[in-house]
Image 1 (tube, rainbow, N blue to C red):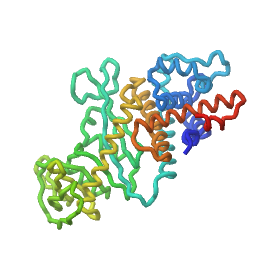
Image 2: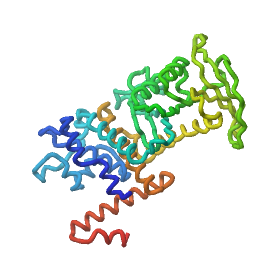
Image 3: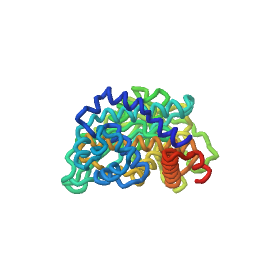
Amino acid sequence: MKISEIMNLVDEKRLDELGKIYRIDKVNNKITGKFILKSFVQSILNGASLSLRSLELICNRNKEISGLLNSHDESKKQIDHSSLGKRLETINCDYFKKIYEDLVQKYNNKFIKKDSEKFHRFDSTIMTLSGKLLKDGINVGGKVTDRHIKITVGLQSSIPSSVRLCQGQSEVSEDIALVKAINEAKIEKEDILLFDRGISKAETFQKLDQEEKKFVTRIKQNRKYNVVKTNAIIISIDDKLEIISDEIVNLYDKKGKKINCELRLIKARNVEQQELYFLTNIDYLSAQDIGEAYKRRWDIEVFFKFIKQNLQIKHFISHNKNGMMVYIFCILIAAILFAIFKMTNKLTGFKIALLEFKLAIEKEIIKDIVLFCGGDPSLVDLKL
């Protein structure tokens, strides 16, 4: 899939339509929603160092981007970092959220097969900022003055299909943060939820089971439970995961009360001789398949590492809650566009694939320059 086709998935007409729906661009606002979206996404994908001052410099020297500013006077198509910072604090974040959701839907319609197994991984990641800079944060440890930004992401296939900014000190607990994220996400009946040991309350597992949400997770080895039934172990030729036992159990809660919910507990041993306890409410998969399914949860850890190292999510350009969410949605939009490029061009890994993406963007820019100068842009493919 060509880079121009991928970038056009963020449709211009749709941006204008959403701008009117969310009343994003009032006459007196020179910095438009489209300007923020495109300047952020392009800078993120090009690997440019992001800050309000660097965006001021980049945008004032880029005619295509500065042309998105709401000003008929060319001499006034300039921005300063303080104006951009103030605009991020007040601009309607729902506009960016809807663009992100539209892109997720396009990805699902174009690239996900309806009969494929749907693993939906959930996890949280934390960024630390100085308390002097950040007011809308939570403290999850460290210095008293430290404030943390915690976001919970749902990863489906290879894209972030849902995101939630954790709010309030209670959401330090994954039992609260992850559950809220799962409840707010769009979960299909055939989805299998994958999450780590952050969720540990027996009542939460019971509720998920009552809501007919299929899940696979891990629990601690000292967890108290009552064995209801022992399943036969099916021997597998796969020597990476040795199944020790497969049981139907009732868990006990923290107060020692037995929860009336039958779940499946699978004990296994990996090649390092480490014992792993998998908990699930799925009965149609083998114990080996349950263990293999849980391995897919690692994909979200890889995703977090990628956006932190390559898409600059560790460094927020706004310390206001609204501005942070605008920035997060732009990063996730950039991540989805990159995922589409990587998949459609059959690339593996992240670092080299991202370099390929950047080079492809640069080639498109060169084509635009050649066309503007009256040349033949098709010759760029032959020469570069």
